[in-house]
Image (cartoon, rainbow over all chains, first blue to last red):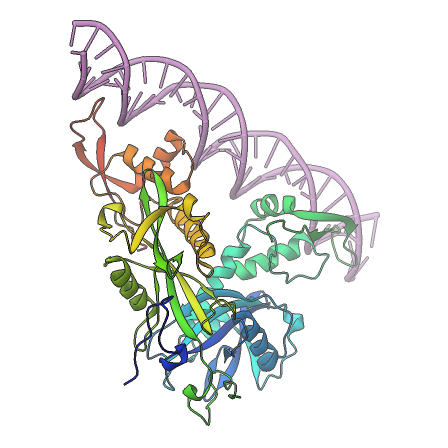
Length: 221
Length: 221
DNA sequence: GTCGATTATCGCGCTTCCGCGCTAAATGTC
DNA sequence: GACATTTAGCGCGGAAGCGCGATAATCGAC
């Protein structure tokens, strides 16, 4: 029977590697917007769908591992994963003791050139009905809530819209993420002050041409 | 040189324990309020002060580990730790590869019967000037921000005040946590609807007796 | 050229929240 | 009993935000 770890920050008489340690995985709810609704990228894990993930390798950070897993599993790079929470139920993985650090990331649908036999976006509503591995359904819900909070009062903070864009395009995106209709005037009053008017108008569209905007860089980020 | 982990959720030809794994620690910013200001409980770690923590043992959850560390290091039990974030810089601990899952917990000052030579509350302002171990200064800032957010629009959600209490006592507590004065009328308008008036008045105090309140159980918790 | 579609603006009434000064009530101290 | 202290309530003016209906402008389709 192996000894238990010493208290953290005590000087142990043994090496840390003498003690039982968990494997640490990262799993990412990679969200995108397609057909005016949120989708999540799923991969096939054995016989069940799952979020893309990997085990943490020595010498890398959690973020390094997330980026590696998205590159390898989904052919995606250059993203900004955000840590959500650690899932730590002792028996969550039948192969042994595994913790998972859940992450959220966001990618424009146009950047997804997935091999559909490996990874594919699934509407969040549909994903809820699937028998996902481990606690991945819970991770998706956490991620959706976190993304909705980010989008509540900032215009497209995880840039999904190519610039420039119209107010209407921005509102449609925000409604897809919020999962509900957003009243037009209130939305415009809240967002317009946070945007940069390019001074240009849309072209090739029916009706009065819409003004075109860019995001104003957020000093907080 | 040891092999790297297989991709998460692939069926490995080797046991998970064949691969390098980190030690996982939990560190807790245990906050309390004393002298109308926030304090954090520090322990001595070698020659430097630190947050109480421990390594995660097989078969327990992070919460189990936090509770164990608070019991062993501080003689405290029955708390409700909240996960904050994982600290994962590869070189953060000179003894080897260690991740730390930072937590926040809150304890009334009256429940702290600490052996001062082991653990002692330190005003958060003072703690900022100390050479804390690892990333513990950062953990404290995260915890303070998280606690302030919890207290922003709910009355004493991490119960610190013994019941019943007066509006003035509640306001004084919230000001200690917020670190700033809160205007009386606005505070009362925001909080009073969320409290249960006991129908009783304070006694033994100078001036008009104050009404006494209890917390109304929050359906969200 | 007309029409429908689309964007944009705005006045307006309403709601919510805030800060402040003032007044009243009730207690303990002297 | 007077006084200082403390709590409590409230009127009021102001600020901020909202939803809605109405109107105007501008485009492409026909």
